[in-house]
Length: 115
Length: 114
Image (cartoon, rainbow over the protein chains, first blue to last red):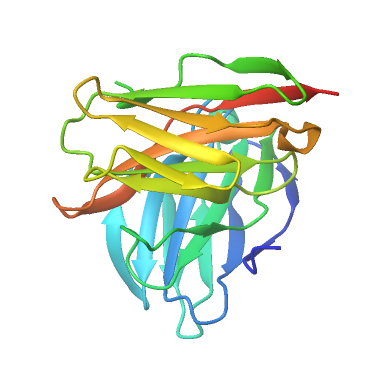
């Protein structure tokens, strides 16, 4: 158990809908990262928050947004969903800024299926 | 354009033998490399890392080798155990350049047969 929790575990929805994925980092971790893993793809970095502030953006679509709240939990909002958004979405946390000697701890993921 | 490539989608090894997982990268600015292990229905777990100032790092049965001139790293597992069966992701970051978010490969599925 990494100490990172993600809810829900599974989500099935229809095209055009909007969903919210939730992540609670490990106790004491200030950084939260979101990744997307599509079929046979590696982990694609979406966005990073550090202590409530957005610090880095990766290949995140404009239809997607995220925030980190004062209690450090984070939410990833996906809107106008398309079939291609079906994927595993992972949240990870780290003590500070990811880098040398500061590895990320991943949650179990949320499997999103868009029908 | 994949900057981190794991060209073998899968690898099958007999228990007790050596498992060698390979990873190539194209970005010469990468200076920190990590391996993650992922079991089904779980998130990736950090396994071992290496800084570009080293060419080898060992942790128990796991050793990572880095060949900077070839832009290649490999993970050796000796001896392999059935519990090592998982997907292994290679990742690399450019921490000196401030791009500290690791870039992941697509993973190699390792199966260790009893």
